[in-house]
Image 1 (cartoon, helix red, strand yellow):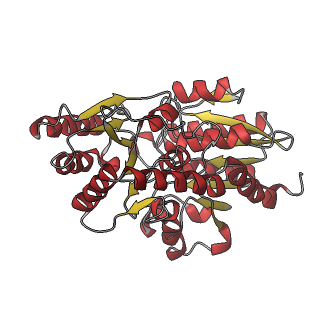
Image 2 (cartoon, helix red, strand yellow):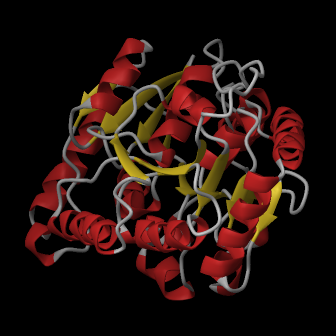
Image 3 (cartoon, one colour):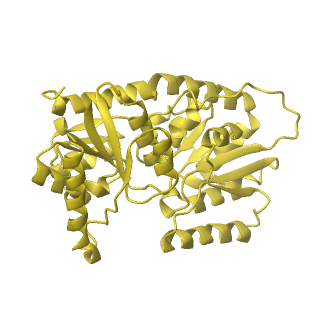
Length: 367
């Protein structure tokens, strides 16, 4: 088996990036590769990896570009290199491009291939800032996140687009049950509570919808990182809920370990960012309404598995929620189409095959 090292951005929380990394290392062909994961801190994600018998090490990798870490980053990079040599690692794959500079250090000092996964939108300036030109290969989750790389001069043959995946055996629809006329129609938004996920806009959407849909509930599913900026944003979201007198309509569920069950409880998923939650909702048979950001337009089949709303964000999404609230047959049809699309497009087997094809280009001599 060829040892491969994965660098995770987080070990204490589970977001979309962590979920995708977990799928990769769990389903990797263990006859060919032995995954090792380094997390910068301990917690629920590190525990999840250990429970799956994935060798996991905690090693603090401070933000490379922050001035206050200009000395400790080199110490951390040296510790990372020592780990790589000790475990005979043959390739390093970062699950978050913010760690690219550590890969550059490894490539320079150990001369082994390095691969960066692009899960966020970048500008051309970010491409240079985060040393994408020093990577051997780049995996992008969407065409939209690939374009800035090309515009910054990264050769197209160094970039592969591999969409996010979902475990279809876990995320699956539940058998339809008879409606008793009492159950609320539930609309959910899943993700960490932070500005990028736009929970405040979700509250605005809810305020428009409840004027037309009395028997409805909105779930904000996710927690907040222990950072001042994120805590302040959560406070703003909760204050907006109170200001608009939506406390009886909007529910903060916090972190859900059983996210597949949380998805089954929804009737619709709304996403105002992007990510693996789209595949998870479709696999669970739920229509998805999103905006043209990141991989969203490439994952949602517009007007078939949901909608991609490009203009009049608040009113546009609110009107589609009202439409599905009033047309339960359409809601079910879109859910069935979403499951079918997930089975054909987002399977872990296809995802792993494509990633391993990338590895084989750099490890063929070893294999």
